[in-house]
Image (tube, rainbow over all chains, first blue to last red; front, top):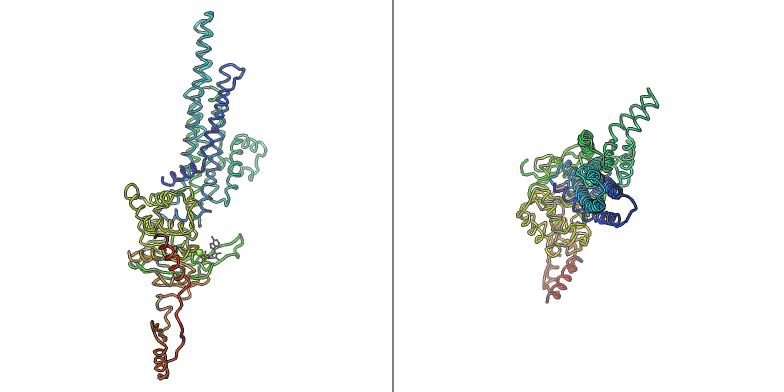
Length: 284
Length: 289
Ligand SMILES: Nc1ncnc2c1ncn2[C@@H]1O[C@H](COP(=O)(O)OP(=O)(O)OP(=O)(O)O)[C@@H](O)[C@H]1O
Ligand SMILES: [Mg+2]
């Protein structure tokens, strides 16, 4: 836990939080735009852009910071002093991972907060406007008014949006554990960053890739093996894609959420275990 | 053995270089020695002779290829062994973004300390290494000597019974290395075992009880320092205030003895180091006035 909190200070002092300021700036710019669309359209645009940014931030940050932390300790020889204290190597690895995840979680929470505030203020503004406009003429029935407001509310601030944030976070956690695994044997940060990004991209084409190979060759053993490897070692990042639907205001499919959470756990355990296998006998 | 701090037994460490099997380096070759509890042991040898490798194996950072290293009876890979060891690596670097005090806090927490006890220990150590003034500065702005001293403080944080120092005075000015030497002597007084290696032979000579000379991974000479450097058949005398006629009398006396010859005669010289230290001390005193 000490390692986790030290990684947090390390990341904080590496000034990563400037990203949050940039995020806030994006939202503010979005808010000040006066787009020629319906209120629901504006809300949906705000959501798409801000959640998209949050998602990119989460996985990019997970890859880059995880890939930097361990090689930096080795290069600076801080690892010598850390591992010559009574610290287990698994504690070190998990500490680093938790540190990164903590920073991501806090950043996501802050970004979500900013975004929620923006959505909420816009939403109540629009609802008030709409109500005022519709009641002024007195030519709309209550049902019609309510339907119109429901339309806005659907694109407004809803509890389900939290699940989209959770999906981003869990995805980032898996990305970080993959990167930790890579950086236990990669000699440079750049290598782990590139490979992890590659895995990230392949992982998004998971079902596509697997079905493609399945139909291409029927009995080729080599390809089959390769396929199994891909299935096992490349996480299926498509698991997390359903959050796009949530952002668009669709209903949440809870079975998918449970599946996502469970599989995330499995991926984390597998990759931490693999990293440990490499790391425990590593010599410095 | 209970009074043995470090026990190296037939330890060999082979590094493979490159992918080929035949391409390897024997860094340490069948090395055996023991360090008794409370002793200051110095390992000396040329660059690449395997000193740092021996230390890393003792710390469990590397596993020996064959043989074993035991620290206070524990295998060196054992986490319990590391509770007893403080380590200062060669050219230490710590997190540049931490201040001196935070660095010590971090390492203290790694050893399971917390709260008031840790706080007291930190200020105690900062005082010991004379870095109280720099405690709130980030390590990025520390000089080499200061880094070395914070490194030493870090090594001592959990009150280890054994301290391993890899070239503790490398790149430190004579005054600073005198401070470090005094610290080592203080540790010895407190009954802490010190295992160090260095290229600065005079300093090894000043602090070590026992010395091992290692060459290409093999121990060449080992033993108590006094025995290693004593020239048994010679005796030296130094006079103060001796007038020429007194010296002539002494010479006559020596010539009368047939089996005694004068090997060397002249004024003893101060070492450059002592000169440097006395100069900088008088400089300091003037500044204080
Ligand atoms: N990680 C490693 N991989 C491959 N070879 C290594 C490794 N570490 C050390 N060596 C080799 O082992 C030998 C001994 O190195 P070591 O660092 O122990 O020497 P040293 O006595 O500490 O030297 P110095 O006085 O320069 O610090 C050297 O030939 C070195 O090249
Ligand atoms: Mg060395």
